Image (cartoon, rainbow, N blue to C red; front, side):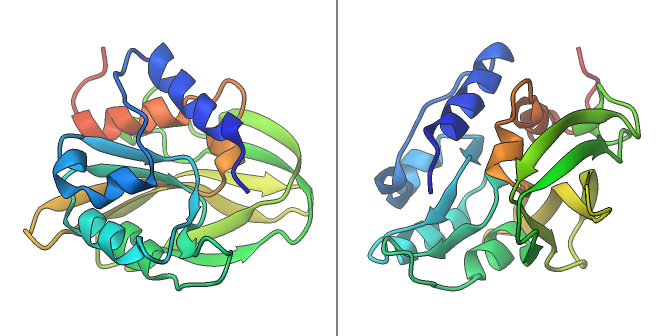
Length: 212
């Protein structure tokens, strides 16, 4: 279920980083001309999609020339919470669902790839934050034939380790590379003091350019 704090946190991260943004809705995603104006689309939570909108949104995002930042499961259920499929995650994000914690757990979120531009302000092994009583899902790369990188992981109080933040790529029908950052949990994307959205946009828009 959508928690409005996830959206507000993403907005706050962008605002504090000085990155201009608009807030758009599901119906806007059916307008290919509208979304083509954006460099990056951020989805703090988009698990459910209207069945009548699914095909249009899927097609528009498939052809989108910009980058995507997505938290959690993506476009897998309809408006009545009926399962659709995993195609949007697999084909649009190059991400696959692996499993879930099955219960609330205490987690520690840690940087594992500080050489990546998205993690330029951190060092390997740096703990970003600790979260108590988090129910989370975890994911992995769908096709390893595309470029990808693991950036952040978590360790929970059952000593399980899973990826939190994954960078992937895919080609759109025009042959352009679509860059994606997937974060496993909307709660982690939105956690207090998180800068994961702003850090992700810097990577997606500026790549390996020096940070200033």
